[in-house]
Length: 349
Image 1: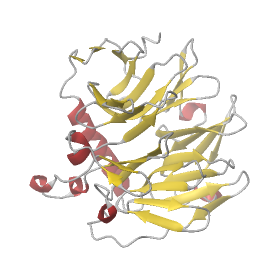
Image 2 (image 1 turned 120 degrees about the vertical axis):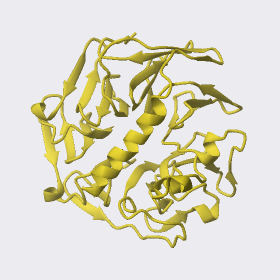
Image 3 (image 1 turned 120 degrees about the horizontal axis):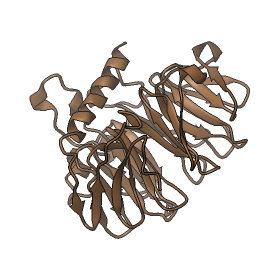
Image 4 (image 1 turned 60 degrees about the horizontal axis):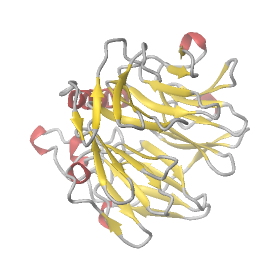
């Protein structure tokens, strides 16, 4: 499958960037320690904290791992998952876990798995993102568009395509990279080639490079507690067949409802690939870059955090430790600034 080939190429590119440096690093009071052991997964692409404060780590090859505060356990196809590629995790109002995989969607009620696929109405088995909105409607982003699930029926959610003048990659132009909801329960859909789309329950609005975004290849969208929207994007020219022409604009853009904002002082936010935006319970933001670690924003300034891999997912636990999954495994940052690689041997505390 071409889409599988593109995903593998993308993750290998991230891996090449992230494995350039894996020695201990120190910057701005942060320290990094690397320990021996087996990585949680070569690609830890989804990190999630459930309502029981258990941590879940979705991987591209090892299924999903859960750390419940005592022990690490893996769930794979042997346990009932439809695929060992787990790229998205969500929890519904009843406490059921949902997993987006390479072969559809799976649910886990604490005892067993139930699986859903194209045969059940999904627009595609290649799931990329999951969201439960304020009405507990499940939004499922895939490599071929969007489906919704109301608790009974899966339905295709048709998305109009805006007019764009930038090149489209035929293998990724229908890839839904992220879905989120803002404070008004308006749905924001990140698309690879068509920018960001907002759905207010009735009408669609489009946010594109020509309006102020760095790129139409949007990878993540976040509304912070002040109501400002943050858009992460990748460089569209990365798809160019000529290696000499794979540079361009990408990174981080903000939108306050009227004006677009950029951060020219940070190169990775303007000419790099940014895949993850995360707001901690404190309101602080964490922004990952492919080639230059993670940035912490406290509302006033950015502080660089030198994680030696490309981070693809982040979550903060109840103790304030930040867990970071990416191309190369799993890391954590404790509240005192210590950054450690986490393997099957830990450290967990």
